[in-house]
Length: 183
Image 1 (spheres, rainbow, N blue to C red):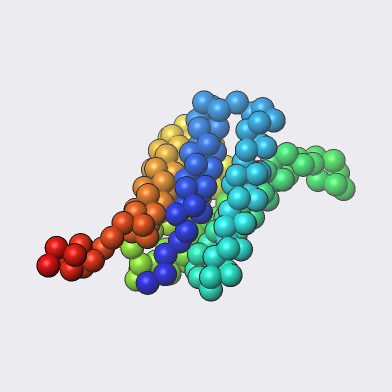
Image 2: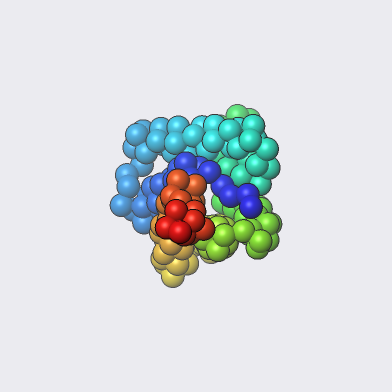
């Protein structure tokens, strides 16, 4: 059974938590925040996605590389002005962007239905997170903002748990191995 790289899940979880803390106003909008998001979330996940591709783990390569590019492009949308008008990207464009990532996350969720349950929770919470972020971007209400923060915290924690679960699964002996040694 194919699983995602524990390293990729850790990076996704940590970046999601960092982004969520920023959304909650607990992480300042300072250069280190964006540098960490770009290097860990963007480049780190793309690197792990490339390693997954070399192992012919297509699902892991697709998910991790795509989310790495998501973090990079989201930072670019938030930080870089539009080259033609010199203005920041307008809210409807960000809303549409987030809805597309919601759809992509939902497709990945369907792809996890035959995988470990923690991956289903990871991609389910990512789908909900992107939907709530898009909805909040569209109407900007405190209730949706709070729901998005709660969803982001859940998504980050579940991704970290998935990383631990998959890391333990790959390094600890299975129950069959333990029972064979005991016999």
